[in-house]
Image 1 (tube, rainbow, N blue to C red):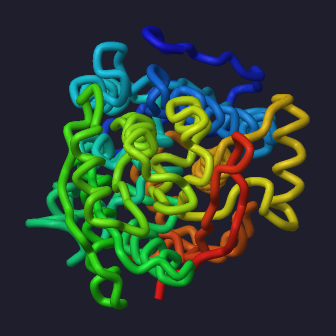
Image 2 (cartoon, rainbow, N blue to C red; image 1 turned 180 degrees about the vertical axis):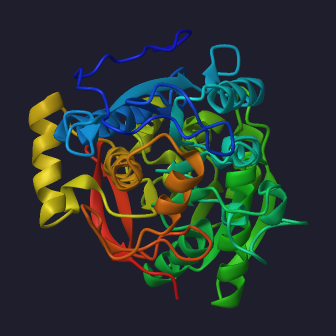
Amino acid sequence: MKATNIIISLLAVSALAGCTNPGASGGSGGGGNTVKIVSSLPMTGSALGQAQTVVNGIKQALDEVNSTVCDGQLKIQYEPYDDATAAAGKWDPAQVTSNSNKMAADKSVVAVIGHYNSGAAKLSIPILNQADLVMVSPANTYPGLTKPGKGEGKEPDVYYPNGKRNYARVVPTDDLQGNAAANWTKSMGLKRVYVLDDQELYGKGIADIFEATAKKIGLEVLGREGIDAKASEYKALMTKIKALNPDLIYFGGTTQTNAGQLIKDMRNVGMAPDKVKFMGPDGMFEKALIDAAGKDAEGVYITFGGVPGNQLTGVGKTWYESYKAKYNAEPEAYAAYGYEAAKVAIDAIGKVCKNDRAAIRDAVLATKDYQGILGNWSFDANGDTTLTTMSGNVVKNGNFEFVTLLKAE
């Protein structure tokens, strides 16, 4: 699904007895026995691989309930939107805004799974908020979307014009991940770091936190700057950094903001993996990063605001095995989070049993002691998950390999 939005036809069910559209606030409406869950993810560009596994997780969650709730009386359709464009090669602000307006106007849509990028969520949350339309993110980690005092200016209140929260996420935020990354750096015996960022909301934000924590715990920050994510190469920058003799380069950014080229040029100017480490956040935790950097990806360290699918236990392990059997492939990092986000939305729809956006929104935000594949967790008052366990990973023999569990301190 790139230029078109494909509606996946699901199991037909009997009409919902006694459940007609109540015409709830925020544009609720549509067919009395059918509602939609939609996603908005980057299905064009190098993030496609990651996004497709999130879509797979959403489909998996729906398949488990035969796409129906309320004793088979209410049908759920799923429609994936692409928030990226070929011209941008990643998420595109105009596309995000267009998608959000379409979702708000489609009265059958009662829940949104998205976004992958925090910058995209910044644009869509206010539009969906005014329509009482809930969004659950499997991947956004920028703290300012939800946490008072952790962002800039009037964040997060500026994103909620109707005064009620309509956004939640199933992943820990960057204020935790950036902190954990700096502490992991110190635990490896590394002392001298140079910090880069892509000058985008997510990348700059997590680099800020890494830098602040690094200074606090006694690491020497040799320098800090933002890169041009569209540059063809960074050899001059890497030559300058090499002269400072760092132990590690930290990049706050994503695969789509040229992480692969940074890694290549770091190695090209002579900073070997056994001499200078490279570390980045979960926006680089995808096969596309290894494809982009090639052999130079070996030894790259990545933090992730959760744990990889193959490290989940209990019902999480059962999910992991079922995913591999269903799709004949290894799930990328956020597949489990796409599944979990969808399950929360499905459960909320099943509690409300009618097309009522405001009621479904409230049911999602009220999620407590949820027994999911990620563990036992709740949404707090800000819509953030209570889960805080994260992981450190490394590229080894062309694949990501789990190294250790991480916690913010």
